[in-house]
Image (cartoon, rainbow, N blue to C red):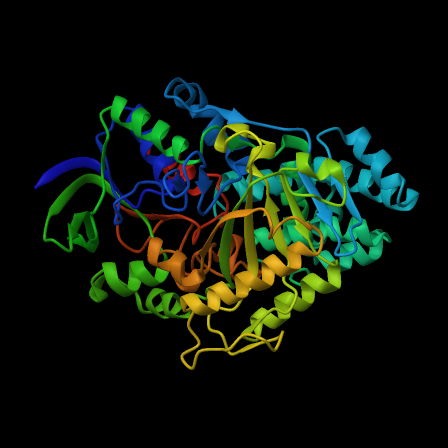
Length: 525
């Protein structure tokens, strides 16, 4: 039996961050990955179309480059070959009628652009940015620390003394507001609302959900202030840099290791056993980057799981499904606004009500008639990913049902079993292309390549993406902060001694930031 200090199950970003930090402190670390490729949701394809590199799943790294994990590891990662690219047009919105709003990384310039639409909205946007900065200590204290800890409690007590208890309570109440409440109260321009409405989708929420105003601001303002960084040459180069770093410090990374169970002795985790009956021993701890349903329904012996934890794990909810569509074009797209060729990420949407309608249709099991299309243009940030003169579009849909009950558009035949069969995914991709073609007239004529990755494909590629949920669990307030992953558990600990849980199913939730791995590594150091 191979022995290590720490065994990490899974090789997503949280796992890589955790393993890197532990290995740098001299611990013997082993990362075990179920698939044949490291990286979890970080995967690139450079073979399907010669000269082109596509990020198949995640692509934006703004949460990582602004994280404490990156701050601590960046020198070694860049020495291992990592290079980030940035541009000054990180985010935009485009309406179906061709009107749009583009933000730059210059706040003053953004205020001028918004003021051209509405002076009131420019003032509201300026106030929103200022307020977000003032509240950042509380927001990032809650999201960047363990919720049930003295450090978080002391942070809140400091804020109560500084602001006064009543004002702190008012702030905490404001953090619970919905995106719709904020947008309808503070903004009047449909272009500004279209810019701010979809951000919350990238945190698993809809515009009417509690917390969606905060999460939408977090996404949009992070992009506007820190740009939309992408890894030069493809996101898998970040994984390669982590692999080099971890191995440099004596760590081991193994693929094709399907974990069948966690070994328990005297109530403590002592290692893991694979489906091929290979055993790995952990002298200090096992760190599992898995969902609660995997951990408590498959990997642990029932006898060591308290009844409350077992019941809550069975009730853990998963969110809406996701799909991505990757397109290569023979020339740049003919956007209604020429400046849009410089934009890293934009949303094609009719606005707030359109986003809400698509979310509602997906929640009822329907394929949305007019989904919000997230359009990422990697070449606007990293021109190395395609030959000169060509173009790539990375499309993401975050308002999809896990089980299909019907089509809100009345055009796509729904399979009897409700599953995302290839024919359904391709038909829905046709809808996206048709919708996008209304604002990009050369899209279909200049199409070189199209690859659809459906919710079923996502789950097949990564067992944590249950039903195609890219966030490994619904992100409603009942499964956030104190309640993520489960109300009965404290932070990232489990009922089993020396066993910890990390990943998107745990606090602080989804996002390519590596925070849960960072928090656990710090706690174990």
